Image 1 (cartoon, rainbow, N blue to C red):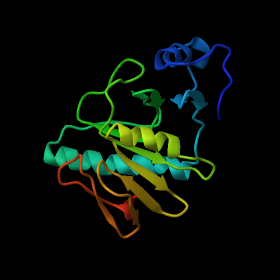
Image 2 (spheres, rainbow, N blue to C red):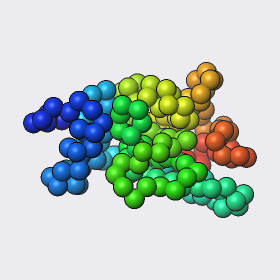
Image 3 (spheres, rainbow, N blue to C red):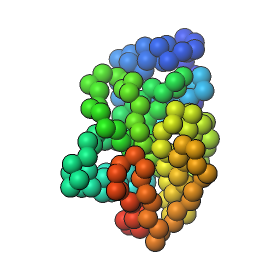
Image 4 (tube, rainbow, N blue to C red):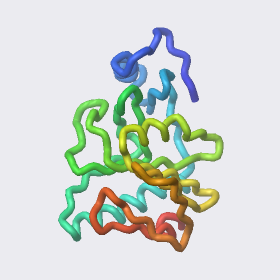
Length: 177
């Protein structure tokens, strides 16, 4: 939902000031293409997918001694001229205790709801060189956008290689229960 704000929000710094106002403390706000957007709650079916993915990633990273810092649907990152809350994000550096995290993730996952248009955020992730998965729960497919590669679509029965984590391949079937 795009919000109407009383003061103009023209920069990431303006957005951060607005998002950290006391009256916005319990809201998940994103800044996309110059607009403040409230990220609303999701279905439990959709919110389960990043949780299942997190379990796969943490298990792999722990087993292979790979640095692993994950955030979920409350962790905000500012990337170039926007601020996003991916449903899942992975990075090899510690997460931030300040809002927002200014060190972008290496990998972001967005679970796409039926009424959502992911194109604006997709462009920003790709421009920043972030591995992006767009998960479409109703179709049980995942679109993968990796730097310098063509779009790849995976369905149940497929394994997705994760270029930013050595040796990790995710069985798509494990994400859709």
